[in-house]
Length: 112
Image (cartoon, rainbow, N blue to C red):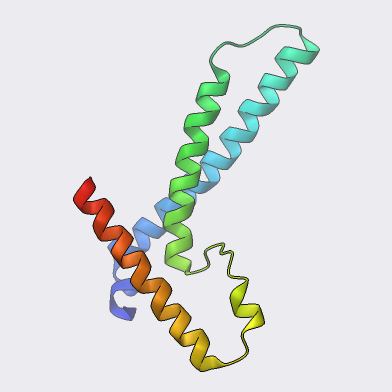
């Protein structure tokens, strides 16, 4: 994996993902500020701005998932691992969860 990460195309893709994340975040904030200003300060509604924000938020969500997968720091609701102290049981749980994700992914791929 180290060789792949050092390849210039890979570094270019990661830089592009970071730029998209920054641009999506900044543009979503900008559109929300503009929407609030026009609606409450100037008493004029901008039609369609919510749909534009929704589109930007979807891109932000999916590209953020890509970057989170690359960095391997997803948000998880793994409460059970805080209560289980045994490393053997934790490893077994990780294997089970990974297998379950694989099965669900195969089912969804076939279904798709």
